[in-house]
Image (cartoon, rainbow, N blue to C red; front, side, top):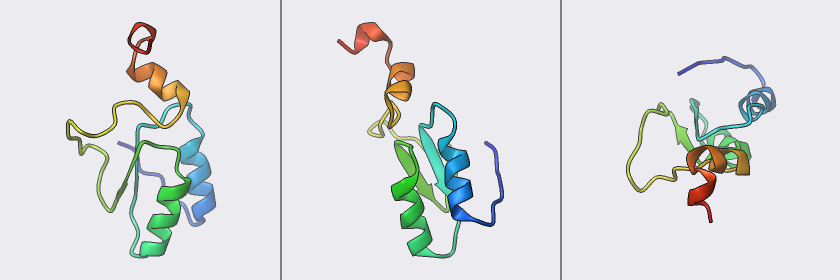
Length: 80
């Protein structure tokens, strides 16, 4: 897990969305509006608010929000 402090939300979201794969993301904030705005704009299957990304249950999505992450989670033979 990595923590990257930012002063501008749009910079943090751009950095988080930059890698080709993002299964989960977290945002730590005291402002509910900021959390909901970030969750809407982050390219991840799940966005945790004020919690770490190590949380996992069986019903959570396995693949990511983009085709690149779905390909990583499911080999081609499983996506037919």
